[in-house]
Structures are given as C-alpha cells and as structure tokens.
Amino acid sequence: MQITDFDLYLFGEGKHERIYEKLGAHGTAGGTRFAVWAPNAERVSVVGPFNRWNGDAHVMQTRAASGVWELFIPGLGAGAEYKYEIRGRDGRLLLKADPYGFAMQLRPGSSSVVAALDYAWHDGEWLAMRGRSDPLRRPLNAYEVHLGSWRRPWHARQPPFMSWPEAVDQLIPYVKDMGYTHVELMGVAEHPLDASWGYQVVGYYAATSRYGSTRDFMQFIDCCHQAGIGVILDWVPAHFPQDAHGLSNFDGTALYEHADSRLGEHREWGTKVFNYGRHEVRNFLVANALFWADRYHVDGLRVDAVASMLYLDYSRKADEWLPNRYGGRENLEAIDFLRQLNDAVHRAFPGVLTIAEESTAFAGVTRPPADGGLGFNFKWNMGWMNDTLRYMALDPVYRRHNHRLITFSFVYAWSENFILPISHDEVVHGKSSLLGKMPGDEWQKRANFRLLIAYMCAHPGKKLLFMGSEFGQRHEWREHEQLDWPLLQEPVHAGLRDCARELNWLYRDREQFHGSDCDQAGFRWLDLHNADSSVWAFQRTCPGPDSGPAAGAPVICLFNATPVPRDQYPVGVQGRGEYRKIFDSDAARFGGSGYNRQERAAAAAQPLHGLEYSLRVDLPPLGAVFFMGPQES
Image (cartoon, rainbow, N blue to C red; front, top):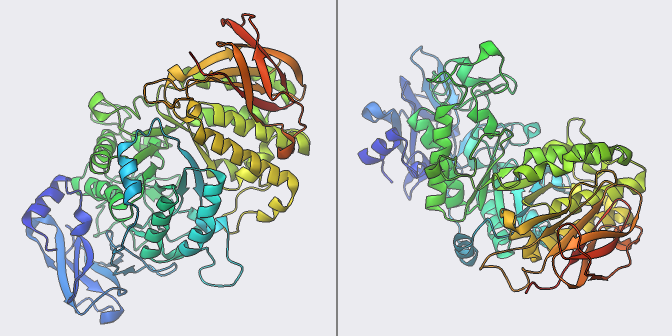
C-alpha cells in the first residue's frame, strides 16, 4: 500500500492506528516497499546482503516535512535481511533495524527480515465469544510462561529452545488439563539478550525468532483458541534498551526518547524512556498494541512497569528528574498515552484485555478514561501479593501478631479490578521458589503451600501463577534451563500439582468465585478477628441476574494457618440445610493428613457472626476447607 498524504497527516497527529501497514517492509508481487520515520536524517538507505551493505545502492526518498523516507526495491522478497543506513546531520553513519519490521534475525544477528504475516485463522468462534462476554464476570486464571525455560528439547540444536509447534503439542495440553484459562507469555517481542527475559525490546513488531517463524506463532495462538485458552502478552512500552541497532538515537538524535537524561533515561535499568509527548512516538506504541491484537489475535496485553511511566521521579534521586508543567511528579504525557492506548484497544477489539502492572496507589487505573481513569481492564494487586507472601513466610507461631497481613487486602479489594499475581519476579534474585518461601519442615512447607494457593483461589480477584510454582519447584527459576519436571515423579510434588489443578477447575467452574471477583456484593466476612488462632473465614456468592442457577449457593471458605487442628470450629452461615465439602487442601490425595472427614455438615439454628445459623467444621492443620451450602431461596 502506498503512503498517502492523509496517512502522513494522521501519523503526525499520533492517530494512525494501522501505521504498521504503511511503515516498515511490505512485500508485493514485484518486490518490497520500505518506509521509515527518520526526520532528522541527512540520508537514509536500505542496506543488506542483497546490495553488499552499500549505502549508495538503494537511497530512499523523503516525503517533504513528514520525516518519512520510502523506497521500492524490485525483486526483493520474503526472507531478505536488511537494515537502514542513516546518516545524521553530524555526518555519522548509523545502522538501524526497522522499528516496524515484522521479523528479525536470531541473536546475535540484529538485522530485520522481510516477512509476510499471512495465515488462515480458525478461531472465529473464540473471537466472537470474547467480544460479547464481560471480562469482569468470566474466569481469568493465567499461567505465566517463559517458553525458553518451560521445557527444553533433549536433542542439541540452535537455538536450544522449545518451538511454537512443540508448544502446541506439549504446553497447550498441559495448560488445558490444569484448568488455566489463559497463558501469559513473557519475551515474545524480539530482544537481543536472553537474560533480559524479553523486557529489553528492540523489535516491537517482530515476534522473536527464538521459537520459530511468525506463522508458527500464529498457529500456536490459533490452537490455543481452539482449545479454549486465551493468550496474553507481556508488553513493554515503558522503556527500551540502548543497543546500537535499536531505537536509541535512531536518526542521530533523541527521536523516540527525550534528549534530557532526567526525562529520557532509567539509570537503574540502563534503558531509555519513550517520549510520550511526541505524536509519532505515541502512535508507534498505540499501533503496536493494536498490531498484536490485529495480526496475532492476542487476547490481552499485560503492560509492564506502569508505575515507572506514571511518575517522573520513579527510582530517581532529587536532582535526577524534572517536574511537570504544574510542578508535580506525574508524567502527564504518559497518562495521556495510557488513556489513548486503552481507548484504542477497547474500541477496535472489544474483549481484548489490558492489564497494568502498577505497584502504587495511583487512583483509577481500571476506571474508564471518560471518568478520569486510565482505562485498563485489570491491575495487578501487588499489595495483596506482598502481604500474603510475607504472612505465609512467617513461622505459624508469629502469624497471630500479623493477622492484618491477611485482612488488610479486603479493605481495598474492590477499589480496582484486580488480578492476584504470583509472577516470575517473586521466584528469582534470592527470593526463593514459592515452595521454598514456606516455613517449617518438608510436610509443613507443602501444607503451607496448599493453604496459600487455596487462599489465592478463594480471595476475590483474577489469578496469575508463574510456571513451576504449581508443582512446588524447589529452586528459583533460571531462564537458562527448563523447569524441574522430574519432581513430578515424586508423589509429594504430584500431589501439589493435583491440588493446584483442582483449585483451578474449582475457580473456573464455580461462579461464586470468578463471577464476583470484582463485585463486593459477592463477599462477606464470617470470621475476621480470630488472630489468636490464626483462623479466618468468609463467604463467596455470585449475585446478579446473569448468574447461573447454582451461583446463589454460598461457598464457605475456612482457613487455619497453624499446625494445630481445630475440632468442631464454629462458623456462621446464612441458610439452613446441609453444606457439602467441595475442597480440602489437607486431603490425603494432595499429600495431606486427611484430618477432616466431614463430607457434609448440617447447619444448626444457632446464631453466630451475625447470621441465623452456624456450622461446626473440623479444621485441618495448616489447611483450608470449602463447603458449599444449599441454594438460596
């Protein structure tokens, strides 16, 4: 497609939502058309092996004041490697990869590659369902995956990673069997350093070549959808690396970043910060989000490091940042960008989720932009994660003094639409694995682990768990090796996996949990104040006219965070009749003691906790039990 003056106008205004169809490399029957934005360049050429990297061979033409350069090269097609040779105003020559390129070489190569993104999709039914359902009321339980270390092939090859076709055969059946609703993929956009886990992106429009071709990745997503699994990508619009072939100093000037390091650098990470106030830069990012939903049919974007975007003084000393025009610390241009991003995604692709990894108390992250919010669907609940992991790491004898670490999250649980994350960040850099964080001997560690994931299931909010945690990997995650799958040959670890699987399906199948994740009316405290026994209990229901026929039946969730069993522990309930046990983290099949033998419990007409009836339940040591009551009248 030729670039029209109207295309250039929209791009200059930051409003060309399909600019990836115009800029970059686009093959035709007779060759390939190239276009790149480099407004401060003196000359731009397309170079590569096809012209022996000769900058005089294919010099591009500029489009007036737009800063866009373009050229058609006959006979050049898919698979051709190329870069842009850019001569800056100071006379220096730069070799840059294509910011809009659809593919790149495998590291350590750094050239862009001409690629077509054609694929015959078979996921129409999934996309239709996605567009008409309410994300707040449907289950979302994501399995966070770094494909390069989930499982590695035994035969030697380069690169030594699982491929997307292998993931179709192995990862998708595993995720489906485990009951996860989504996979959240780390490191999909092209990045030069494996150890960056994909958070130092150079190819924002290029799916990494580590795991196969663009078509391989499309087929993986298509197969996920056909299996009923959504796909969320980690997306990094907060910063970019300083690699010579990347966006940094792209045309010899600070083009994508700020020139002033007080605005344009994250010294802690050694990266550049996007200039969100520049229309063309904002357009680059908004269109990139739409690109992944359009060309790859992804179901969501988890936006990394949002807090670093919102605050000008993020991780900076007093003399290392500049205030906004009102003297404040908020990055007003970044806030406007995030609002534009969320509006564009939700308008163009209803049902595609945007998720903020935001670690502060910034107000309105999941409120619509029209109401003064940022417009995300969900926000990671970092407060819940930190408090819960701190509590669970305590020796049970000290938990009575820290009961607030459990109860405080319910003060703000409905202030945003939350996801409860236990991500890769919690199992690296000396923090220990999830199982390794648990106190006590080996039996107690596993019991605490089961208690934790049961509490996570029952707590309001969508869910995310990092790979390997579900079966209790003992060592921290290492990106250069596969998960410790042989552990599953040990019955105790198979039991942890089975417990995680049962909780996943419980969350997925019971509207009382997923249907009221973001609705305070679906939650009621039953036993809040028993810090001395480290016991708490609450009720989950799913109110609303759209709920299923069984959603009105309350689920009573009881937790005992000590190794002392509590016989006939009383808890108030609102309805008479018989309550049926639907989950027990201490069940023998999970490696527990099997202490609770009550398959059913009858409600007695004995008022408790402000309710007319009560149950008496045998609470297992370091365990959780869920009982579902009769249908409400």
